[in-house]
Length: 139
Image (cartoon, rainbow, N blue to C red):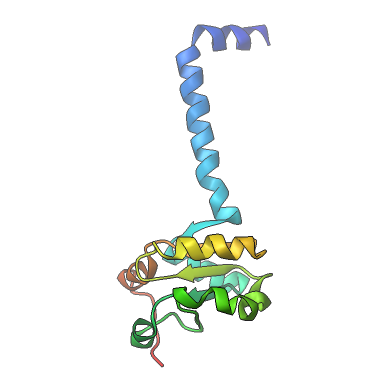
């Protein structure tokens, strides 16, 4: 133990850098467990293996032009009025999707305040989903 303490004192800069990198690694890992962003590939995994629900926050016209299969359509400007309807998904993983992934951040925050624990936003939004050539459907 004395050798370890001596090493830490003799190599303070290295120790500081190591702890900083370790902290950054932990910090970036935590959102994947409790929320944060998920890549399109991770979203597919959550949908396939954990029965995740996708909430599409885009306007009606964009939703009609193509959306993720079985997505629940709740335009971002109507989320407050539809929180009651979304309550049945509270125990499931939820993925909020918008056009680019920016607007869904506010929806994720709002859903978390309503008790949704496993809520994520689709990184890059529907643009990333389509760039990954993942399936969409049209109603």
